Image 1 (cartoon, rainbow, N blue to C red):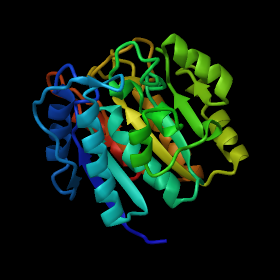
Image 2 (cartoon, rainbow, N blue to C red):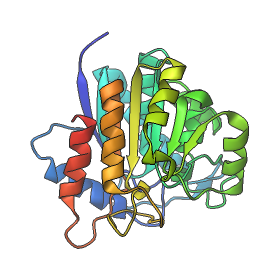
Image 3 (cartoon, one colour):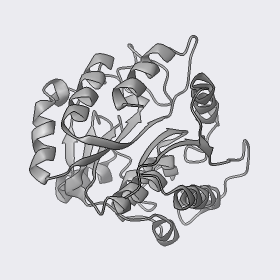
Image 4 (spheres, rainbow, N blue to C red):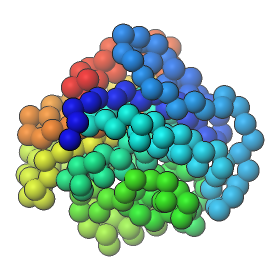
Length: 274
């Protein structure tokens, strides 16, 4: 295996479809991290997003995933960090690293939402509500063909989730996927023990900033009350890093309000080991 790190800038907004605020926020983060070199997945600032295959902006989302795949195939990194727009940006790097490490990867999905809808179950048809279910192998055939691999439910941990659609709740209960509420993460050692029980050595840590309590950190696309505190997130990531190798990580769906609180974002990035 190589020992190459890749920073990815993927400011897609088409997964949300309603506006491009996450793209603007991603650009703020990239400019803030001006000393880091990024490979960029170029996205259109504005475009029409017709529905196809039960996904709003299907062609745009598929096109962007193919571009992300080309970058990963060309660079062949062993570790990645991504500034993404929506959670839809995760399909490329997570499926790549899962393939690279031959399925020895646990996916830690810090997110207020499950992102576990299929194109048929999604009430909104927004692709950013589907990426984790896509990574689990339930999605449009062409999108699945473009991904590098799929993960198994027992290696997926939804952390801090507190707003789910009915289909997502049903899937969590029936699939074997792990779910920790913000309250359950008050003792993150239980999470560590569960990952160790699976024998996983490598982690991908996805951070959708809406995992956080919005009264502490409001700079997110879809704020949901009763979230994880900033210190709780940092403590959990630091404990994960002490016990496992974080081979991939991301920050997505940053929408800065006045001030933007980049200090907190810096703390999260530092905890991730970037």
